[in-house]
Length: 427
Image 1 (cartoon, rainbow, N blue to C red):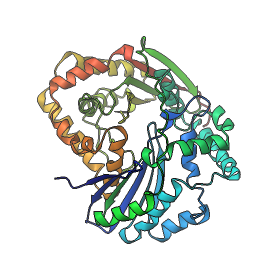
Image 2: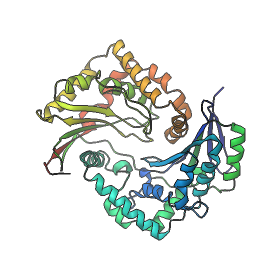
Image 3: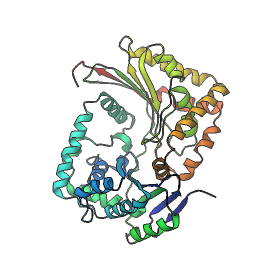
């Protein structure tokens, strides 16, 4: 028996429902299988821009009333675009969820994309991009991503390249919307205080008449093996230096992903896979914190990876210390990685790392909005069983597994090392 239901309509729309009667709330997430990975050169950033346009209204729900309507009913809403997906959510009092259901069904097909709104949003997104270019970590991370992925479309940032933001047309945006915003390319996840049969009947009323579209195109450009370590330096405003070390990492559906999560917990502290909620756990017991921050080689150190369809990156980020050069911090990172590759970690240390990773995971699933998030999120790179089995799979990780993934993935030929060198100018 499961505590959730999955139904697929004839048009291919997948629906996941989870009844949670702890509070009179319902959270709805509509996920589309489209992200920056689906963008070709010349149209980078188009998925994120389409997301913005979804808030510009439809004939039934004009932009001027959308925000007020959600707020008036005591709800909250937002949207996010990532490498592999775009998602929209509303968390509402359970008696008001019909507004959110009608809104998402309507804007799946009826968003207007008026030329005036397209140009207005072009200005907004270009301004967002310009603001990011004043941020050291954005400048460094973007350059690192471009170096790590020369062929695969993970090459570019979600916001897109400035040249494309100036050039993308209204018709290209609308074509992207029509291509990927189809019921057979979407998942609806709903968790909260409802009766599954009743709400499924309402969802059928709203979505059954929407026809399935052609199977959306996918860019198939696997990244070739990296020929050796890449080192780079980025210069920019500010007074703080940063060091980023990125290794090619396993995709979410890879059997090594769970062992990598335990290794992450042990090395730099546990990561929160839920990007939109959950608490934090101190990483002061991690190996890198003790070897680098405690010894004042850097002000901070953090690490982590994302759950993605294709192999992405495991990244370690250090904030420079005013009195210590980052070369010393890099040497300390290399020493700790060498230790992991040359000796089996004790069972007690692995057990502690698993416990911390489990606790971090629990923080990210503790409310109704996060429960609905996970229903759909796991479908973007695997399925909901991946989520329900996650803690069990973490618990199965052994010291030998940690050794194996450290030896497999933490190879110098498999990484990009980037330094942000501040010019001292004001940001």
